[in-house]
Amino acid sequence: MILQSPLNSHLRCRTQQSRAADARHYAVKLANRCRQFRSLHNESGLDWVIGRNGIYIEPDIEYIETYKKMGGIFNCAGNSRCGHTTRQDLAYANARMLSQDMHSAQVYNLHGEAITQYQLAEHLTRL
Image 1 (cartoon, helix red, strand yellow):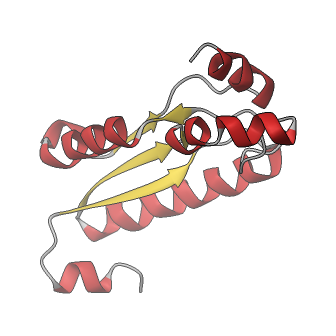
Image 2 (cartoon, rainbow, N blue to C red):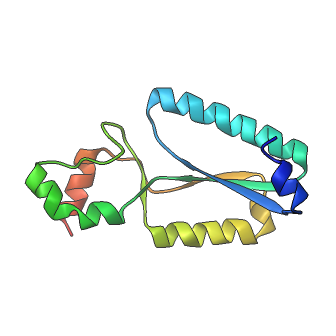
């Protein structure tokens, strides 16, 4: 069982990271997986918290010149909308989620507003 190892090691809290996306087919899979995760962890007695990541913004910033040459932004968001976050903000949020009991049994979106690649390009041109 997925939880046997954490239970045997006396783990107090378990976290799951998942990518937040608005692609319809992916959203259904993600919702089902989160329901299963919560059910398993509620039964286990472990504290749990889910952090839903967006895309790290740093690689897109580093690739600005490449994107200009390619004529567009090409990343894992594809044609979907996706929220972005910095690695530093994500690390801070995860540290808070894991170190404070008030976050137990919560699900957090750890990213900004979901935007299109076109909107991302508009933001990047302002840098």
